[in-house]
Length: 273
Image (cartoon, rainbow, N blue to C red; front, side, top):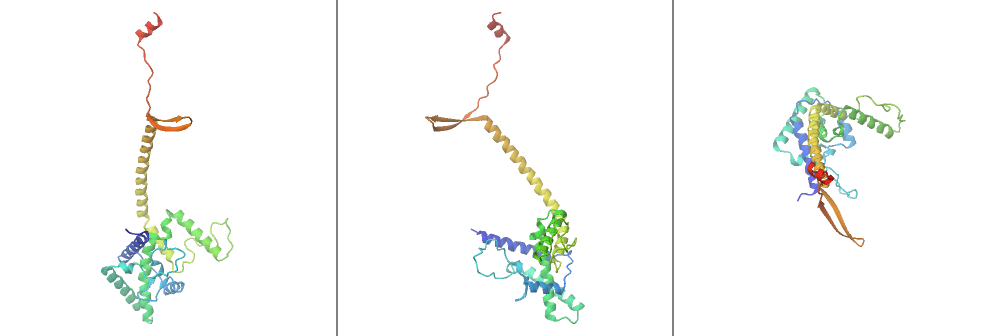
């Protein structure tokens, strides 16, 4: 029988493979990133370049079930490379080659190693966006108001982390711009916002389907409550005691008594007329 840890790992792998498959055949995303963004992610330790091919660190499986006392280091291997198919692998390197050729054509004096790394980063960043589109923080936002509140809260936390004065009466914290996100140098949240908006029709359809299923469930619960009330009215609970001690509990059928009806002739006879 599959353990909870194995189930979580398998679910995380499936999410990664879903994002990988979407990104490999995506024709709508227009990802605009720079080498400065790559350098920043490498400096933060988010993009691992210690072995080939490089990968984003948070592509690891979930750590929900890992004990805080566990000191064993994670392998650091991206999950989708363990399950990637041959066709997906070929498509991945095909996209890397296209990005590399485009980069070499635009910049003649770029270092070949840097160009190869940046080509990988472009494809991995695109895969990451599709991956986060299914499990990123924006998936909790139902509408634009929720997203604005999330942005407001993140800017407020950023002001607190950087020890800037926070005025709770203001609509936006210090440094907050209407469409920007804090600490978003590589514009990852901007890309996530665009993907979130693009998925609005599918999300609205999903909400309608959930509401329809919930309406069916609520109607079934209403019928069950009515049946329970009818059953409760049809029986009566009788408890039998002997010298203060409960001896038995029985459910007896309630008998509905109707009002007696007398014929007019009997009424006259009983009245003496």
